[in-house]
Each structure stands twice: as structure tokens, then as C-alpha cells.
Image (tube, rainbow, N blue to C red):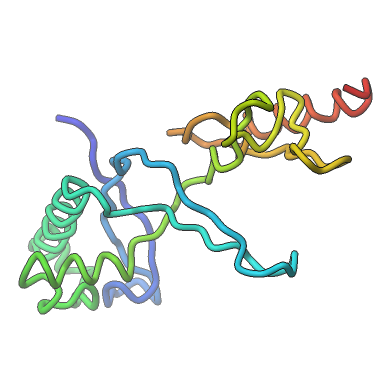
Length: 179
């Protein structure tokens, strides 16, 4: 059987004997890969751009996540958890009552725990979707490079730290060599 759950600590999801923390089983399968959408909401560089991860657009993703959330709720009602779980605070019984209600709850609560990557496409100057060249130079802007996980060609299914460090080191080499 595939491992599909992990235990994480979250505040305010379940009342527990463990002060201010609770156990929440989280479905760890990835959503179907879609390209996220991002856009600037202001010309002010200190304003966070809008990031739309396009979660739950696919009916199969919604079905899997509904099943996972309902399974988690049932598992935590098991007698094995009676000593540590006093009650479920979220999702409510009303949210679990129908697919539509649970979908609404999921849309309000689903977020990423991943490291975002692949939002700043690397490609040739003839590619209208490319943002940077092979040296991570931003097209149309002189002196600006992108040296992070956004230039990765695909969403990583693992921690991006080491790969991002490698990208940054390589871009530092480019700068030293004036590529």
C-alpha cells in the first residue's frame, strides 16, 4: 500500500491535550500539475504579485482531496486517538456533509506547502513565454537575473533547497565570467 498520509502539527484544527497543537493527517499526493498563473497587481515592487496555483481545478483533484479529508476525520474519531483528540474544529460537520460544502471549505483552506518553482520560464529569445535565457538573464531588462527555483523547468516533487543553491552558485559563476 502506498504511503499517502503524513502527520503534521497545526494549531486550532483539533482540540487536543497537547497544548495549542493538534494532529492533522494531510494527504501528500500532489495535485495534477498545472502551470500556475502569476501577475503583478501593482507597479510598486514591494507589493506581492498575485499567485494563482490553480488548485482544485481538476475534478479528480477535488474528489481525491474530499476522500482524504473525510478519511482523516474518520481516522481521528477512532478510539486510538481518544486520549489526545477532544473534538474536531475544522472542517465542520456541515462542511463534511456534502461534496459542494466540502469543496467550498477546501477552496478557502487549501494552500501550498511546496516550494514554488517553474514560474519564470527559461528559454530562447524566440519563445514568447520565456522570461530568462540560459544564463538566467531577464529578457528586456539589462542587469537583472533570476537565480532561484522559479527558473526550474518543472515543479519539483522534492525539497528545492540544494537545487536552488546550485542555480545561485551557477549564476554567480556567470556573473564572475561576465556571461
